[in-house]
Length: 150
Image (tube, rainbow, N blue to C red; front, side):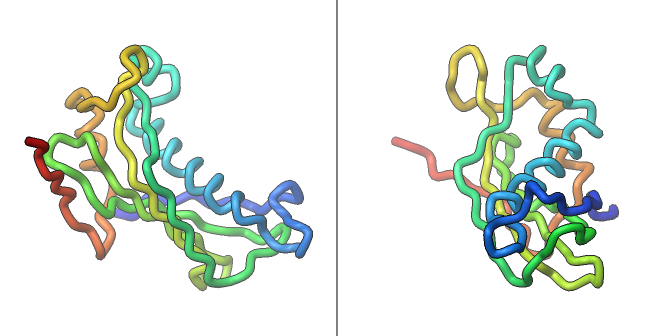
């Protein structure tokens, strides 16, 4: 299975006062790739609304390694770094590469699924859980095991 990826050209709006890409733009590109992956699996925003479910994040960790400047071409990947048995919790690792192939940053997110009516965490329908079969596993992948509350 190939790694899911998208290519972007960095925009003026992505720049900070130091004339390099602002920190929040890294996470914006990562989020776009996650949503594009889900849409490619049939889970558009409209489909999520029909299912009354949506992805949420618990943690977002960005590591900055190389500077990215305006009008640079970047490649952003998405790989599964963790998943629990019922598909209700997941970790995705995004790598952001400069045009010359050097790794510029990583964005790791821990997420789950939210029932949009009850506003509570939920186990996703099987069709959503199955979507994760179509994303490659990062070399650091580990199963997510949740301790049961007593």
